[in-house]
Image (cartoon, rainbow, N blue to C red; front, top):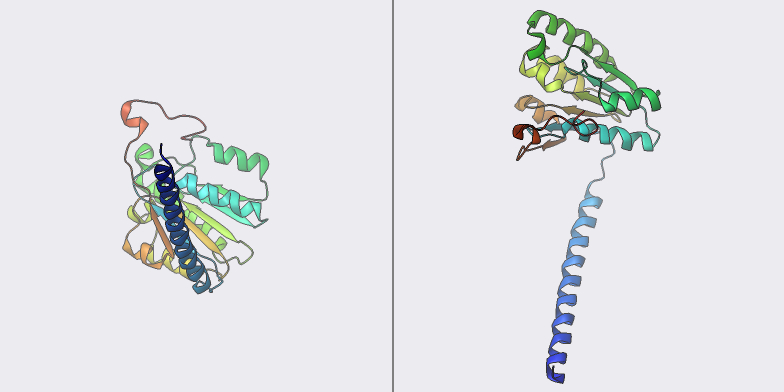
Length: 212
């Protein structure tokens, strides 16, 4: 390699470094500006929806995050409950301060009993609704609540009103497929988990510690 070639390589590297620095400075300015503009201090309503795997897992990640800050947390699970989950085991054994309630009927396609499912949903909502009015809770997770709306097991208007009128500093996390446009409209953040590929479709059994 000639000296001229070496100079060219060094100059190219300097240009790339300068271009990268300029791009990062611009990105930082944009991020700083967005942070400065977000000056409203209150709880948020988050909907984790879509047909992909990971909605409840994400919600429990938020639970762990809140607990890390010493916040008061409640988790109410609709539909799930016949089979123990790792989240339930961990919270019951290691986080007794977390209010935890499960509907306990399993999936509606397992029970095949609409009247019993509605009764169980109403009983579970009777636990969840007061939590949404309790300002001492920093985070309330309503896992799989969207199915209660989709199947018309619970009154949609009552659910929306309870979420919208919760204490100002309380955050609520709702998970499940669908839930309708009215629910999405009142949420601050809506994230969709998309199913691209799933091991179950290839005949691989659900894995303890990963799937449940």
